[in-house]
Length: 389
Image (cartoon, rainbow, N blue to C red; front, side):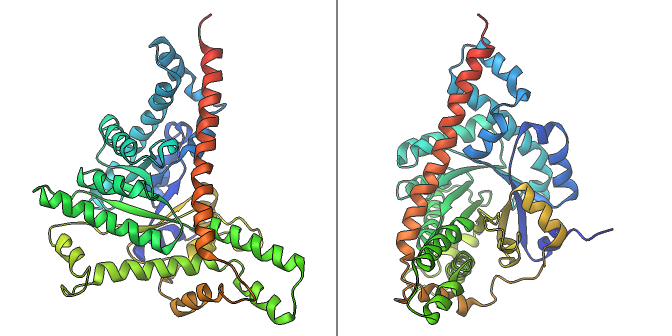
């Protein structure tokens, strides 16, 4: 029997979650099989995934008709559909949640992307989603925007599991980690249990390389001064996202290993860990390779390591099960990673990584808003078709 490399990855301390959810995979038993036999130990979803799942799929029609009969507005019909799928997925993953002592077995659902810059609306929706869906192994996705992080802090203080999404820069990850810690400290100060809360920080990968590679290709197409400049530009292609992720992991280690009370932030994590707090794991997101010239599992192979999660779309899950090269590499070539990021400042390369990260965050929110609005429009059309005349 062929080796399933997904199960090997688990032995390295990394959990594999799936970036996909639809009623089809729930009802067909496919999700149950992936969880029980393929090593999938969590689910992430987003508005783009739900648009693909619901638009043009007759499997949801009976529930849409029920919503119409109940007089629900389109948005509430949408919620009834996705909340049902999320609950069922949570139930399928519940054994993993219990067996892993609440480390895995989570299903993530995002608050509406249209409120990404509204702190209070995000807090309100996070609370409502968590209460209405009513599953302990639910994670609420909140974007790691300037407005999102205070909402993360409050949601954690409220005892809500949080997946902070759309993280691109190392700085945004560090800010996210401290928002989690502050939320736990706030909850602890209120005399509440912090041992049952989980959080992941979703650090995006392929979109970074796609953006930077396009900039490099534009420079090469325009023509370069000499062979040396061409070599420098080509050396950076397809390498920035992984280097960036390895640096983020080093920052994660600094936060959890900082024990000196004399240091500005020293000892804060240890104090929480002593009360049963779980580490906020880095989750590698946007892991399907966009460039056909690159390995289809490069964002898996290069970032395997303890206390991490990798969320993969179905195509990458199949590819990885078949031919991932499993080894603990999260802390290999770290010095080279720092050098690579520093090399972007070289006048021959001249790529402003901070500007790239800002651009990607704006784009990222838009990439969730557009399918969300598109889904609302297609649902509106479906409601008209299915409504009794």
